Length: 482
Image (tube, rainbow, N blue to C red):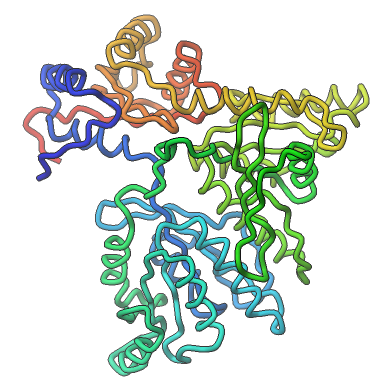
């Protein structure tokens, strides 16, 4: 198939030795190469779905992801927990950012659409622009076209609500938008979505263009995230002080300043999309929706997510959601507990209990107790960020990893299930940022055992401040084909 295989994080000599080991254990060489290649790819490419309300964006997203996960409701103000989903087409995985959530009010519709589109386009590698073919191109559609042109990202044009041959002529009219061929689809019935997705894959990079850390000398990118009113702007202002290097104002009336270059601890860092949402929004649901969209966009552009938690309040479902978003995106993570100086002894006691129970999923993340208002412990922020980045970039040589796995399996074998005992035969680290491991096993490894392996990997090799991805490939039975 493909002779030029990506060795992931492995050098040539290490790769050759590893493949010899795989062959000895009875693994198909191509299977092993595919597993390393797949695990080594890193962050998935991102597709933003944009367009004005009621053109069928969420229905199309549901069609693409193959399940009813995006809320589809015919009224404004619909809130959703998530704006980012994972999809697969023709064996390739990618992320979808859906902006089909809500409309602000009829008067401010253009501004509302533009704001949503800008946040989503920013995070994306390519855009899927959905237009209602039965209505044709409206002024709002033209405004979105201008945004797409300015962003310079690849665009696929979906002419939706084409349910039969008669609608093809309506779709053809959309050539006038100047975005190339309109793909006639029916998100409701699925008509034409295969051709549309084939084109999407052609426009999406195999792996995102933004290959983290490859830009020599560029400042590291930090997203300051957290639920509304948690103190993001105050923290940014405090860390910036008088050392702010520059503030880039991007064109567009609906947006606050985006990236701030700030000097901290003698190093210049780029704080991505950090400003709070200062726009007056009529519906609270809309404000929450924008917050989710903005957070998703900021995290996609960053290397480290600094998650702010308001310690004067209980750790909420919204906090948990934001943490999950950052972990799933595979970024390095620091937890900053803000307003620490406002706590009395009793609240501090209960907060520590909450952290133990509610923050278990990120117990590996460096923690700093700060006060954005007074500047307390701000000097601890940079070392925490540097620790998280170091964990995120850690690479364990294959020989050392396999010696560790051998000892682990001998001391703590997998429980026997159905008379069989699956064993980890060998493994390799296929990539970094975040660390990604592929384990090759004789049988299925249970989730509990995988968590145990992750915990021991952290104890042995550090990995502070970074999620770890572990994928397992099971050896095929001899003589059996997939």
